Image (tube, rainbow, N blue to C red; front, side):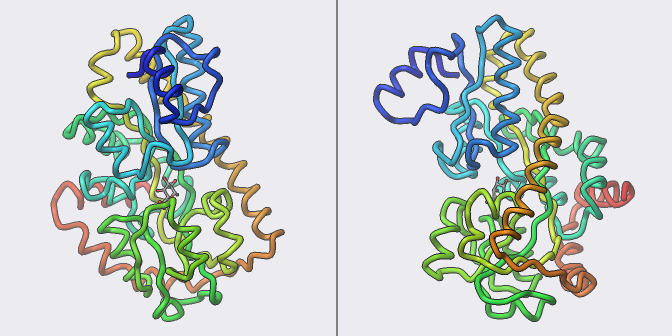
Length: 327
Ligand code: GTR
């Protein structure tokens, strides 16, 4: 946890770019990482928590969000939170599938039928099980946020079926499951951190990538990749994680406040998300990106064997069956 003095020292040293004026800072600050830009719904949801926390503690405890990947790649921020070097991190399940296999189930292709299905499952028992599992590795799972639906986009051509992806280098997050997903979709998957995707598209290191439409817009990748194909292959959600060390250092009332505010931030985030997603869809369409539907049955069939291969243990199979049972 950063004290006001630490924060001043850090900023004076220029080690971290400030995101809010120091004068408005509470006495103690929880620092939070996010790879997304300011204004992205995950960033704003964590700021919302911070503002409510500061108000409820009379300015004693707040949150400062280091957005745009200022604190590093998602995998690294998870490790930093585990060891108490940062307090909070908001990452996609894609960054968690290797260390927390339950998250991988929610990232699998076509495990959710719709946004409503994903929300129902993540608000319910399956989501609770995933959040509790973070305790195994020094983390407290605070909340699960929306991440829309991931689709494939590229610089070359519209994709209608898996065969159209043959030979295309498609960036995926650095995660075993996502590498397998990329292959199952028919592409040549190339794992890269989020912050490197835009330049890799520009330099033709990759031909395309896959993500939700908000990220496609806010990272400006739509300027380079002009074909967006509605593969709808993964709803891989977002997790807000707290360092166990920080949790242990907080007072009992502060812990309860933080847990409650994190829970209350989920509908706040979703409202921001729904608006942002619609805005981004309009924006990229107006900017000339070509959107097309795909043969979903072919994509479902192509990915079905890898989905089954990922359900090798009883807890994973049970989670999958429970999620499907809520469709
Ligand atoms: C986004 C997600 C980010 C990051 C990114 C990626 O949808 O919100 O946290 O994981 O995808 O593909 O790296």
